[in-house]
Amino acid sequence: MTDSQIVRPYGDTTGDGMVQVSFTLPLPHDKVAEGAAAQLANKMGIDPALVVHAKSIGAGYTFFVVYGRVNHLVDVSQVEIVERDYPLLTPKEANAAVKQSLRRRLVVVGGCIGTDAHTVGIDAILNIKGFAGEKGLEYYRELKVVNLGAQVSVPQLVQRAREERADAVLVSQVVTQRDAHLLNTREMSAAFRESYPAGKRPLLVVGGPRFDETMAAELGVDRVFTRGTTPGEVASFIVHRITQRKAS
Ligand code: B12
Image (cartoon, rainbow, N blue to C red; front, side):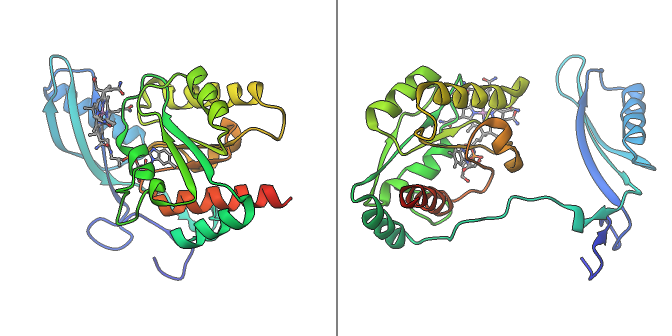
């Protein structure tokens, strides 16, 4: 990127507008299918559109990769992101903050809800072995972690959160088919709102690779974390919010 706030995609030469997209069409692989892929790419604003890869992926379906030029400009000054509004703490600092503020361990209950069995993400955050060189929340002496694992129903999650007097509930959703991650998250946040008096419910955090960070309010949760999240970020967020809540 130059000093300008306006950028274009880069393929072979700076600013040439070249992009690559992939998709599947419900057509057997033949010349018509390749033409259909090029037509779709044209309608997406890719012109010229070159079908660089086409492969049959079962009877009546073809996977395509299309390379071509778009004329769209990106105005970086208009990009909306969720800024980190909490300090990043080391485990030692997080433990000290909890000890000083709560004078007891901070309780975290986590799991995958609905039919989702993709536990690797939530385990990366919670398990002691952690992720990307950072230890998971189980490593923090002042955090009590209850990892419920896969396919936890919303009523089970609420009940366990109540039994454990959870300060924070961490939910992972990896499968996004038919917007399952959004529907499950809304069901979960509604259940917590119903089950706790206003202002008393635990901090609700969801995470998964295909969430949009800007959707927290719409989903009824306090924070959304996406791909590449590290345990330290999550611990810092939880400790910051819970100790702030306690102080106010
Ligand atoms: C491993 C895997 C499996 C394993 C899961 C094993 C396990 N115990 O987790 C098994 C083989 C069981 C499996 C099954 C299925 N899978 Co699968 N699976 C994957 C795979 C290859 C990797 C996922 C993974 O482990 N990523 C690594 C972790 C570390 O990354 P992560 O989950 O993104 O987590 C990070 C962040 O997102 C974030 N995060 C995640 N959760 C949370 C939660 C909180 C609170 C926070 C703060 C942060 C956070 O922090 C993590 C660290 O940075 C992906 C494809 C891929 N390459 O991603 C497909 C994938 C997720 N699976 C998929 C599918 C379709 C399935 C099945 C439906 C297949 C089938 N037809 O049976 C089943 C569903 C089973 C079920 N009931 O859920 C699809 C989902 C498509 C979609 N749009 O929904 C994918 C994308 C593959 C694909 N391209 O089609 N799968």
